[in-house]
Structures are given as structure tokens and as C-alpha cells.
Amino acid sequence: MDAPAAPRHHCAVVDIATDKLDPAAALEFVSDPGFGGITMFVGRVRDLNHGRVVTGVSYDMFDALALNGFAEIAARGEAQFGPKLKLYIAHAKGRLGIGDLAVVVAAGTPHRDEAFRACRLAIEAVKHESPVWKQEHYADGDSVWSEGCSLCGHAEHAAAGEGLAP
Image (cartoon, rainbow, N blue to C red; front, side, top):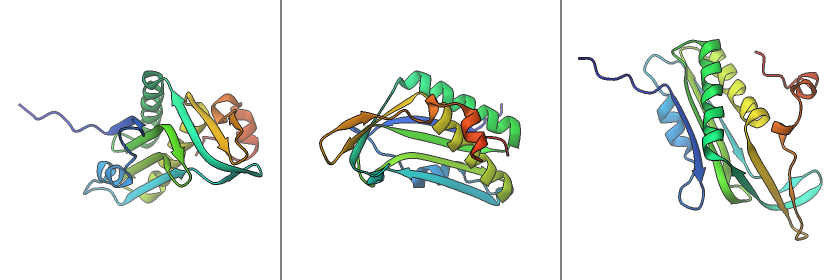
């Protein structure tokens, strides 16, 4: 009897109170001896947004819904780039400080072009479609729930050159 195939996609919501995002684990997951292309996107919390000094952000999400969405993104990637694609999607949940990792997406494929395109497809889909709510905290003591890309229309982003098509 054959051993079960290793999973081709890893999707996770990481509660920062008890764990952390691990880019090295993402690279390890998408690595394969037959792959010449491995790409990664790492999103970090920045200290300035729309002219306001940011002290941190809080991410909240309904884990099961977010994980289902990440899995759908991975399935779309596989449909577009083939069954050899390995994809890693992990997003932080909880309160993060400046410089903390918020999201890690990695893609591994036989060739670099498809790896770049698969990684780009995945991070843009996570940003524009996933039910992730972001609250920014500012130096003046104010905090605001960000509209976030998942609440805006794809047409706006496509017009700005940010579409999900390759």
C-alpha cells in the first residue's frame, strides 16, 4: 500500500498570543527537489499609514471561515499553475507591534515565473478577499478599524493594476 501523499498546501491562522509566523517553515514546506522556483511574500506591520504614526495593529478573524478562504485560494492557484504547486498561507491573529510579521505566503513550482505568479495571486487574494479585520492603533491614542481590501471591489484594484489575473 502506498503512503499517503504529502499535503501540497498549508493554510493557517496563527494566534500571536501563543505562537508566531515562521518564514523558514514556509520555505521548508514549499521546497521540493524538482522545484527551480520558490518565492515568498512576508508582510510586516509598518510604523506609518496614511500619514498617521502607527504603534501597532490588531487582526481578528473567524478562523474556520478564513481557513476555508485560504484553501479556496490554494485550489485556484493549483487550477491555474498545476498540481505541482506547493503553497503556504499563514496570517497572524491578535495584537502586533511595529515590525511584527502579519502574513507569510510562499509558493514553490518547477519554474520561477509560475512561482512568482502563484505567490502574487495568493497574497493579493488574501488581502482582497479574506475575512480578516484590521484595527490600527495610533501614537495619538486613537484606533480605527481599517476598511481593508477585502471590503473594496476588485474593479477598483484591477483599474489600478492590482488585478488577480496573471
